[in-house]
Length: 342
Image (tube, rainbow, N blue to C red; front, side, top):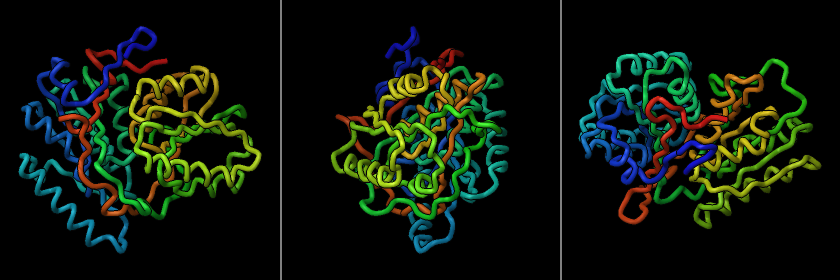
């Protein structure tokens, strides 16, 4: 896909990877209870393209799910061991722990990696880590010439509540709001299944003077779309007279999503607050847009209400498209060129 003269390749990992001409990658991922959290690594391992590897494993707050979560994590760790990943390459941290401990370890891993190409799998990765990692990898001090991001769709999602006990509305590390926010601002929300406290912020008048834009993914299965509309109705019931626009988007197409964000903000002229509650590809587009505005006079900020507990059956299986696993690969930097710029 070509935008503003820049070709931004994306597609299924099984089709994209053999065509990039990259011999091997450093791999950065996160281990979760979900089978899809190791799908991208499993594919790369089978092709012999993994040079270095680092997985992060995040421990939820204690809950009624703890024993089942631990059992499922043991299964995933065994699967990783079978794929040649030893315990030293899996770093375990509390989900709500000090982020500095994670960022220090990430910096150490990136500093010793020999490969000039890296693949970041965000399928099971908390937003606070993958936003920070991508910003680091696209920054001026990065020595990686090629950066590819992958996301794997599950076969099914749990039909009930997926996450619980959301925290306060906080900026993600590295994406703080300015001390004095401009009066002309736009709140852009990626719609998912769980509002995670966002309706409470609406009802409290947190966005009473803000133009709100809701990104509604329309490529999902019908039952997923219904859950997205439930999210919309929760917000609308609290929004009152607020100006709200709904944008129907392809929830997989990161290049188009990036351009949609650019259009909403008039290429960064309008200060934006990004709320990545929706599918990971929408969150990735938000991350790339915020990175693209980072050196401007009007950088976007990113806020989220981090849950402390996830359902152990958050998702099951790995979706397929034809004969390939539904692992989507997005090239965000190739041959030293960052592909997502305003």
